[in-house]
Length: 184
Length: 324
Image (cartoon, rainbow over the protein chains, first blue to last red):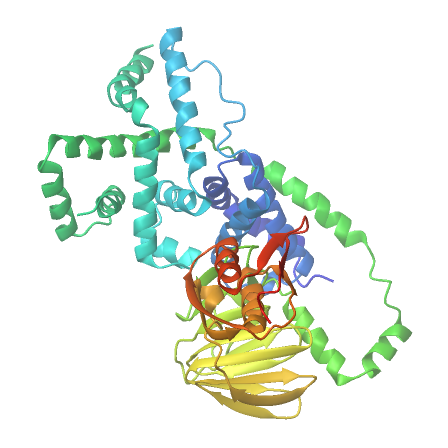
């Protein structure tokens, strides 16, 4: 029934999985949700059975995954975003105080990100992690470049305001911790 | 510079997108006060910290992810398409050409090459297509469009309501197919298009739209609306100032009858509103810019001496003897 075979879809999947996973993850901040979105997008294409006719699979899937991720956010308003899941253990710092403080900082960084509106967070994430230009993001989200400029600025302001009490730690303490990690 | 402008500029600078002139402005802002220098370095630190932190969270497992997809594919694949027997297909084929058109359109709505944009509950979405055309999609509507248009036509599919600003391209007409079977064709223009199961309405703001039914086609010009209902195509002048309120957020009522106000409010907010009044003909004048429905109802009921309430199903009720 399908006019293309599984091997072809598989090739497209393996070629694009990592960049797609990154995009979905950076919109959703959650590994499981990102996997769900990719899974659904590929299955949808298969079920509709015509993937051969997609001229540019990379561009198609990029766009489809970002749209699907945004739809996912709409439908799962209670999703725990930026949930680190299980983090790798024992990253070297023995000083318990420092480690606790670092953990607390990270926790609050995640919380602050979670508090941004979905669109703002998406713009911030695509900027930071995907190195997408504001013009590219504007095209992808169907808004003006000026709106992206402003939303990114507002995201930065909101993050800084919400994290004001951690700024001292971030600026002074972090380089120290990082260098400690380096020597241990 | 306002705070907003400064942060937008910092964002651009961090991304390496700021122009020479913008960097210059940012620098003179930074140097104008120690506090400003601090703000900049704090934001830059946050930027770096987020990058290192989030990258560590991201995991990849392509094999596992593919396996899960493959499992489902195999399930789908082994299901035989035996439910459509030959005789059934013969009958189906002979029913009518209209069914075929319907099936074709249905198929378009299941075409994997097309990207899906869905208007969310309570949210208007917009998108810029590959050719530069801009589309605003109303709540609870759906648009299907290709990543790239073909060489001869630009075809999209709409269910529900959208506002279209089509980039001119005389060689590639822009065609909008309604999920329910009508289609309109344009070259470069701005208009609102509503599709319903039993009718579709094009209201043209700028330029000309060619609207087609099965038996004829009409040119709808700026200031006119074309309506296809039960396959009959007609056109008339359109004058509702709130036609595009779903997109602009602005509602304007000028000596508007209560009946027409309720009609516009229902459409604008996607809400259920009931009227229990002796007469629907008293009029009201005011305008609202991105106000909540509750605020609008407050003002209307105050002016017209009515009362409003809401029941559990989110259905609003306006009642009273003020309007008679």
